[in-house]
Image (cartoon, rainbow, N blue to C red; front, top):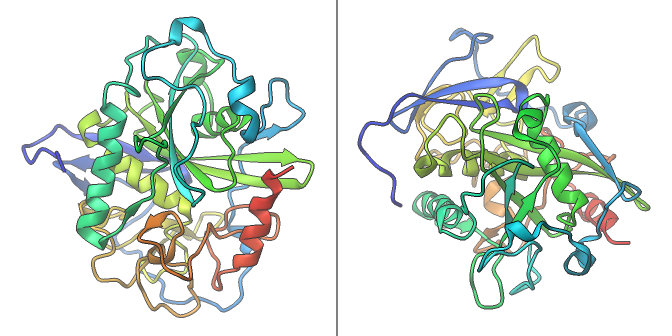
Length: 357
């Protein structure tokens, strides 16, 4: 991993999944949450049955197959439109032919309508971020994200220029949802893929967010969740593996609110926060070393927590993949739920089938 051990300047990283802000310094995280005090305790109770629908975000951006310009994922190559000025050697505007048919992470490089192209998709920048994330996983859990590879074994990174300017994007309440929705509109809604989105410029003071959109098709609605990293955001590009890894873990369904150290937020809609109250973890909301992934194996990876069956170790999007694997946890309405005591595999499969029509 090419992370610098030298001091870096203060990094403000607003993980906006629950409007919760985090401050980073020297690769470590400092508590900066005005709504939470150190008096909050972890919650070890996990009821066997909960209202899973309550613990969904609902998807804040909506797209439909009836929207103008909609492209089906399996027809993308034939119908995708792009500006000839964006054509560069080695660049792809669509999801290229896959090396395999397994569950995987696909990267998308997004520019605003008026962004100057810095070519992060073809100059090795995004590739390095993805590799750094995988190096973190390999060091901690001896697994890595299964990245979408082309038939010649290169990381498949797609390019997309959206229809809003940088100023218009910064006026949005939910830029991450917008990027996820625009990607889906342009054919990036493959049922076996989760998208790692890299926006070239900044969005407020954010460094990373979960992007969620509601996809409406002939088979019903289904939420699309992606990990969004702002390459012009509050942190340096060389450290962008932090939000990329963190937000992809969120998109996979973690941290589940039944985890023993899930942060309690008494005045919030969920009553909890999908970050950890404990320190020293990539998913921590309390500070410390971000180079660790559930080191005690008691929160979200290879744990044995009762009535909390979602386990990152079993994710279908990691390799090596367990024989009995898990997909994203889904509610009855096919939204991503942050509290699923018992994993419901068939439901998750049925939800993904809604993309096939």
